[in-house]
Image 1 (cartoon, helix red, strand yellow):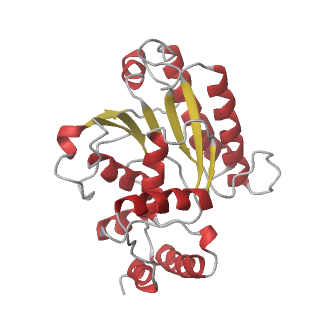
Image 2 (cartoon, rainbow, N blue to C red):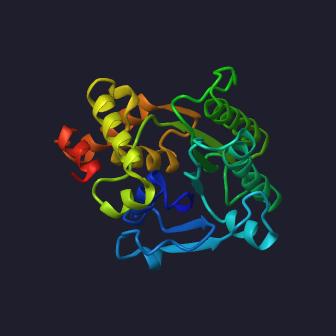
Length: 271
């Protein structure tokens, strides 16, 4: 599989990127980014030989030389997405809704469609990181939830009208940067307040409300399985099902999965 990835420096995207690098069934990875991968990101040793980077600063428009490269992929994992905190609705809508639709429109114009090279049972899969709180009715009263829901709905409608495309909307609940790589948290969670919030939410959700918690390794495993087409016709994946998918994958590869515990949450604070 030839994978296209956005948001590769974020908590979800970076861990998806690492997992894709060590996945032998993924032959190449293209990062769509505004700048090159930063030096603080710890990566497997094969990163350079398996990765191509498209540096592109305007995610609302794609010139032909860029869009012609995008259509060469089998799947895209769209992990790009800012927090709504401190953003107005117009800017958040552009980053969350307009950017992914603009890329798909550019790919359509560049010729992405069903053909002998892309048969009906092997469409281009667009895996979109939404939110467990997303509301496609746009009546939640929460700006981020309504915009995410609108994006899910519009992505589904767009792909339904264009042959060769299939959207998969993922709705993970709360997740935090990997505790395996200390540098992640330093750059993805700036400020002691954000780290304390992560610790509190991790502790509460992982023990009291597990349906609202998503361990980053489980999210990574489920995301790649969906991008590979293991659930070809399903469009929406809620947090509980994502965790179940990861659990099933773990059971196949290892008879014992390490349990979540408070010590992993404490690591978030580096205390």
